Length: 74
Figure 1 (spheres, rainbow, N blue to C red):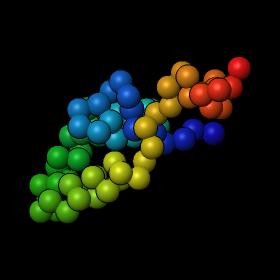
Figure 2 (figure 1 turned 135 degrees about the horizontal axis):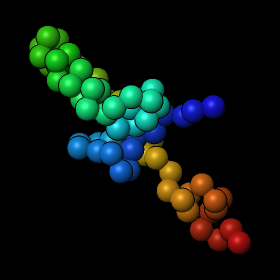
Figure 3 (figure 1 turned 180 degrees about the vertical axis):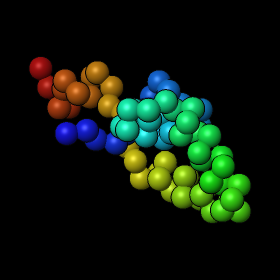
């Protein structure tokens, strides 16, 4: 099952668009373009939703996070 994360590699501000693009399997540029258009037509309310989502959606785990349960796990 896919899980939504903010991207650590494909990011401009917070990595949210890169994470959404990876989750849906589309280009991140299309997500960013849709976000800018939606922000324009919603008079900026999408920007508030974007930053709230960036606070809620966790960052993509690193290789270390995926293979270790804690700092002292051997």
